[in-house]
Length: 114
Length: 110
Image 1 (cartoon, rainbow over the protein chains, first blue to last red):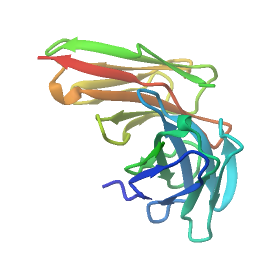
Image 2 (image 1 turned 90 degrees about the vertical axis):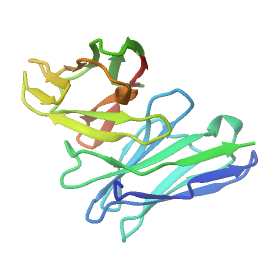
Image 3 (image 1 turned 90 degrees about the horizontal axis):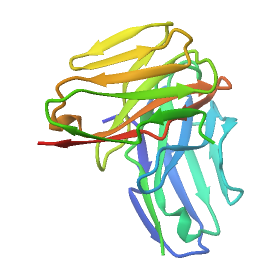
Image 4 (image 1 turned 135 degrees about the horizontal axis):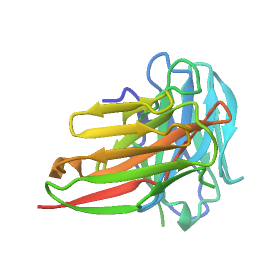
């Protein structure tokens, strides 16, 4: 158990819909990362928050947004969903400084858009 | 796009053989990390290398950080079925972003 909790584990929704994925980081971790992993693909960095502030952005679509709340949990919002958004979405958290700290991953949320 | 490149993308290994996977960065890294993702699982941290030329071992796994701190390798000896999975390297960029390579997916023939 990594200590990172993601909900829900599975999500099936229709195209055009909006969903929210939730992540609770390990106790004390200030950094939260979101990654997308499509079938047989690597980990695509979406966005990172550190202590409530957005710190780095990857190839995140404009239809996607995220935030980190004062209690450090984070949410990833995906809107106007398309079939191609079907993927495994991982949240990871890290302790200490954001640079050079190992990341601990949650179990992921498998999103299926039909 | 990816700033960390990994090769090969796939590695099919006979049980008992050795293999190496390589990771190359477009820029100098302060450190490099390796993760393993078992089929159906999530990435799990294996190790972090910080110093130029650093070599670390975990049982049959040997990790190396290049002298220029722009490349790294993972060598597995006497491959076992438990080594199946995808191995990712990752490096920090712009102080915050942890960028992962595409991974090397390892399958083992018994």
